[in-house]
Length: 406
Image: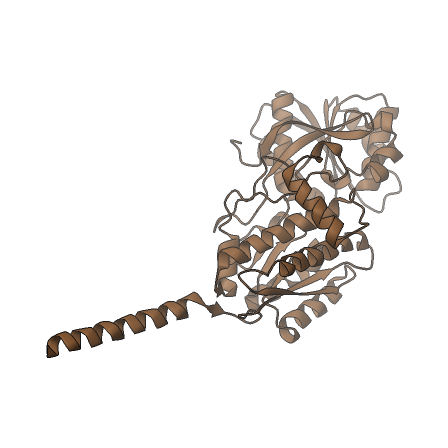
């Protein structure tokens, strides 16, 4: 009897210990997270030269308000703190320090800009505060070995260039390619991606011509490239220069296949100034649905997006791609936090962000999915080609992947 009693007491004690260990294991918090809230920080260009992107931050704020109205994430409300950095690196440093050291945020999410985020990358990694889903296309954010606390969101310039390279090979296996690119990190990133594909192929890069953003006109570069006899023109230029290139190609009567970065797909800022007729047939690629395009009217994801806009951002300009972008980024952030459960440590956030499998936000094109791993910090590595036709962009073909086989 005594032995049985002791056994029962021991079993009860063991059970008690196990349950307290389980409770302890269930809830873990770092600074900025608790039973009731998750503090998310952000810096955005609400003013300054990149203020058009400010709507991204406003969309994310509205999305998190919707999540809070629905009860939050595992019962916790999101406390969103977003500051204006005017797209100025010194200001970014100041605001990020404020978020981390004064506001004590759990993480920084979807902060905007390559120069601005480069200014705080080492600081955030030293502090071990997630610099998560950055709103910039630089390929350097995918470096989990050296910067384990930094991850981008959208397809990088290099990823996009690899996809263009694969498309060129499929359309013209023996292409003679002329590359026109900006002499900066953006242009050079593209160049690397293109060469990764084209250098190992039957296609030939016959010319590489760079330009400086201080040049008043790039016409002489285009004349030079035409004289190479290239039958494919890759336009890695920002809007003003992309438009000049398209216009000059038409004036010269040169008819190469034109592939242009999605940085310059604006109809108002590029295609119209270049001339709609001159722009006919230009190719690019994308990964987001266009909320103003009637083809998505009955799409389930876009129905959710439109319901969100109607309730939380009434009157917003749905043709602004920054809205569908901010929505997709916020939805992905929420998915990561859901996956964290009650283990809200910064380390677990990065682990979950690096464990996304075929996640498909409502506003991404059908078939494009988010996948990450401990060695792959590039969430979106697929695009679909589109062609400029009759004054608008039309999707065509299959989803293309940056991976060599896809």
